[in-house]
Image 1 (cartoon, one colour):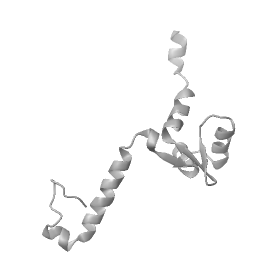
Image 2 (image 1 turned 180 degrees about the vertical axis):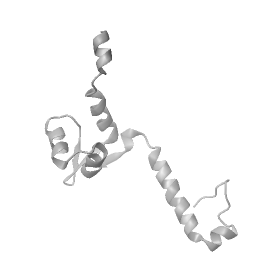
Image 3 (image 1 turned 90 degrees about the horizontal axis):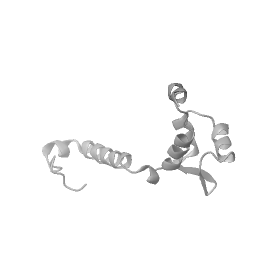
Length: 102
């Protein structure tokens, strides 16, 4: 782990509890992943199902009907998060009130 101005990795605490350094490393990695742009985040089919709270059949229908862009890699279906967000935005329905005001 590279040095950090917020704590000293060589401190007595980290020597007594090395698992804290491992935890900090994992936490740092997760934060970096969360800060990646949507165009770099790849979801597999189970990730998408969980995210949208839909079944495997529903994601297959989305693909078959051309609602969501996807790729096949080694027999696995994957999606870019940015494509999923674009699909959601393109199928957005305006609130009822704004439809009556026009």
